[in-house]
Image 1: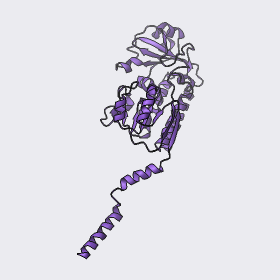
Image 2 (image 1 turned 120 degrees about the vertical axis):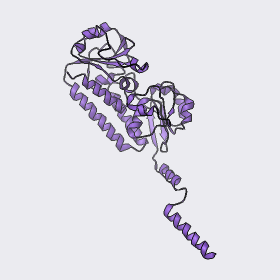
Image 3 (image 1 turned 60 degrees about the vertical axis):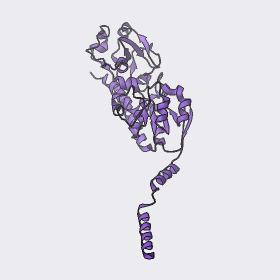
Image 4 (image 1 turned 30 degrees about the vertical axis):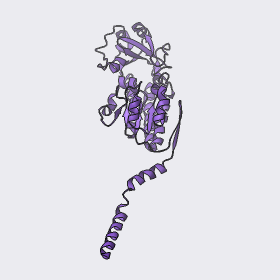
Length: 321
């Protein structure tokens, strides 16, 4: 009997030495948490410290969802009201909590997602105090009303910040370098040619124009497009303009962003469906240089790696004859 007990004890000891104790996996996670270097992010709404590796992330803006997608970070919760086509796979994912509307997140659903990090932009800024009570909350300091030159730098900075938070520094640097290369590609096309362009937003038959100090200011300042008008300088929603204004500005290139296609989920405008006689008299139309821009990339996002790449491709296409 003594020999049997001794043999059993030796067998158990050998098993433990080979496989480790039953609680080894949690201990490993604890060791990872202890090794994590806290990251403090200073942003427009204050300062946020992340002191452990985030496991469940809620992103309340589509730009943030794209950042996470670029870095291979799972999304625990997100708004699913307006999801761009390049993120469509997230919309039907049953394990991702739908947090409501982009501009009006459902705080109960956010809480139900059990996040340990929440990512927001200015569109959700008024909920910051409540959100930070749920989990550490980081504000993406993109200025949707006046992007100008800083737009690309803000995108890159946020990418690198998320790289530090999620221990994806090298991947984030690679993505940032790729954006720099894409901007250089645009500048090689836009620097030099005399063509001037107009960015206009279509909304149920009406138009708004965007200038240098506006939502799409970065198209002119960072990407080097020459503006056809200096009077359209109105922030987030653009300056309402008439067809006569567009005809008088007579741009060489027109970029049309179809808001109606996004908000009402209609097919986007095309050269065949835009039956505006005054626009058809512009130099841009006569020369086949009206670009029907990707409305989801330009309107739903416009401040993330994927959307910036799409916007740059649209911009470049305006210079092709």
